[in-house]
Length: 176
Image (cartoon, rainbow, N blue to C red):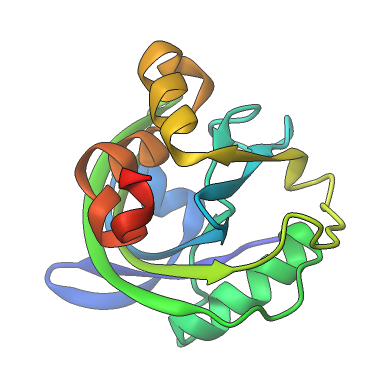
């Protein structure tokens, strides 16, 4: 299946096949969602069949909108597709940009719309095994410590979010 995402080429937003965008390191649109229960974050471990960063822990949901798809709509759609999570109330937390080598000659150069949602840890989940191999809740201060001690267990973008954008995403929860 070919997935077309919005990427900038020569200063213009154009539809580009997702793998091509990563091979060429093109700047492209993305969405990241952080589902929280108090100061705990719902993490997912990327499925072993993912074409980059398989088996690494990351935020609740990270994806690319389809061409002409609204980022908020994309976030809701992918929470359902990846985790079986139905439309939690999302709060837009802003936009960030990062560039990260994700291995295998692939680069994520993303302009990311950030969203948070509040939930209970008892929230029912149905992870899609083609996307997610495991889920777990982790308190933010434990996550920050573990990412510092074991960075190879986490996706590059989660490490960047915690290091450079934690306050924008988590606000006072990060200080808890």
